[in-house]
Image (cartoon, rainbow, N blue to C red; front, side, top):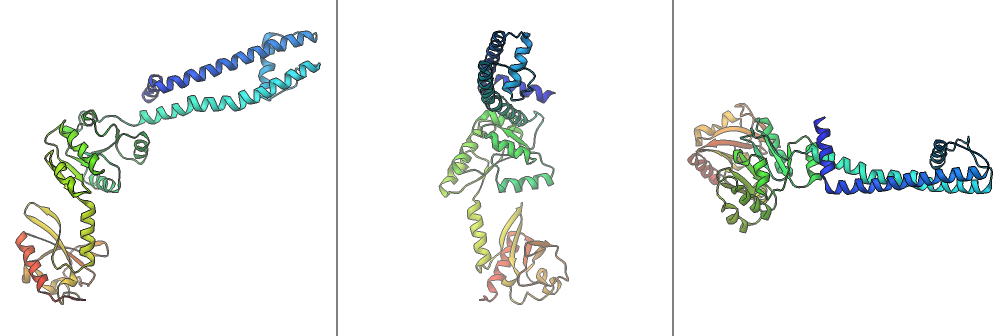
Length: 352
C-alpha cells in the first residue's frame, strides 16, 4: 500500500504525467461528446422513421455499433439510417479500437509503469548506514568486488544517475541508489561521510569530479579510483587519501610477465610488512618434478610457500605435491625474504 501511494504521488506530481493525463482527459471528453451526438442523431432518425426509444437505448445502440458488437436488436429501416449506421461503425473502429487503446497506453499506462520504476529505486540509504562501500560505476570490476564484499559481510551500494541503468541493477539483485554522481547531495543521502570506502571506476574526468565532490562531504573517507592516463595521476591524488589503480597498465604488465622470462617475484599483495608474491616453478632450475618437501625451499632460501597455482586453480601447499613446470608458487615473506628469492631466480640458468 505504501509503494502504491508513492507511485500515485510521483505520478500526480510529475509535470510530464500531468500533461499526459490532461491530454487523455481531453480525448475522453471528445469521445463522450461524439457518443452524445451520435445518440441524439439516433433519436432524430428513429423519430423520422416513426419509432420512439428511451435515451439510454440511444447510448446503448451507439456503443454497440461503435464497438462493432452490433447485436442487431435495434436497426434502421431507411437508407438514411443505414448510412448513419455505417458512419458510426467506421468512426467507432477508428476512435474505440485504434485511438483509445493507443492513447490510453501512451498517456497513462506507459507513464504509470515509468512511475513504478522510479519509485522502486531508492534515492537514499538509511541514516544508520555506516562502514559501507559506495560504488559509482557498474562494470565487471565493481561486480566482482561486490561478490567479495558479500563474502565478508560488507554493506555496499551502487549509485547512478540513469533510471534505466538503476532499474537493471536493481533487478539484478544489487543495492542501488538513484542520484547524480557529481553532486554532494547524492553522497549526503548515501551517508558517504560514514562509508568505509568509495570506489570510482569510470573515466578519468568523471573520477576526478567524483573525488572532489566527495571531499566536500568528508575529508577522511578513503577513495579508490581507476586511472587510464598517466597525466591524471596528480589531479586524482590531489584530494588526498586517494588510492589510484591503473588497471590497464597492471593488466598489461602482468600479461607481459606471464609471457616473458622475468626472473623475479611478482608482488600480488601486502599486509603491513608481509609481502605476498608469486613466481613460476620453471624459473628455478631442477625444481620441476620434485615434491615440495624434496625441494627444501624453506631451508635453502627461506621461502614460505602458501599456495600453488595450477591452471587458474589454487591448491594448499601439500608437502607431497609434485611440482610441475606449469605451476606458479605463491609465497609470503618480508622484503628481504623476497629479495633472496629474486637472487636465486637470477642465478638459475635461462630456458628457451
